[in-house]
Image (cartoon, rainbow, N blue to C red):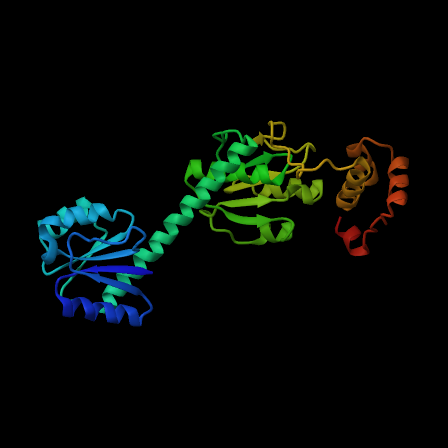
Length: 306
């Protein structure tokens, strides 16, 4: 981090500079109000002595609008504080300066500046992805509701757009990572808002039980499937142009069949899976054999649980 110290008291400026450099900061000292600096000089922090540049403080502040300005003052009044804040000053520190207090202020604004840049970065990212995927404007549903989509990415972007619209924050949970029963058993804070993905990963009976027990909580679900689901509030974006994510390549039909059978055979009975794929049970059996997919047998414990 590079700091410019504008102070005509050479001893004070050097003292501050030495102590800051001992903490790892790079310091440049100037007692030239014209500030004839190299065009490539960029400073993160400007320490500006009010006594030194009273009449030109406002001009200096405006010149370094992209830097964090901390004005060094001897006393507080309308001129040293109020007018300086209006001009764009971030903070002030009273002389004689306590270096630890100065460093605390610098680190505070350094952290704040980093957070601001991160927020802008992610905001621009979401807006960029929204434009590419042609994500529709969120419905004004109150939670809970389900986002039905053809891709997880589209559902996620829709959820983030809803969160930004409502000015809310999610706790993220995935049914790929946690057992659905553990969500029911958890003592969730009533004010906590959950974005729960992976409804398509659990069986229909489990899905219905989970939804029925969470129907009064602040939950936003994603459902990447065209299977029928019993719920009143469903934002269906599965047919929206550009919301179908094919990963940049067209998958061969055989590879698609193999992937679908392997992925969903544990969630559906043979009759249900064959129906979803639009084939007969015999054809499903033949495809398993052809693709070398071994049907997973239910354990005794699983059968008893059902």
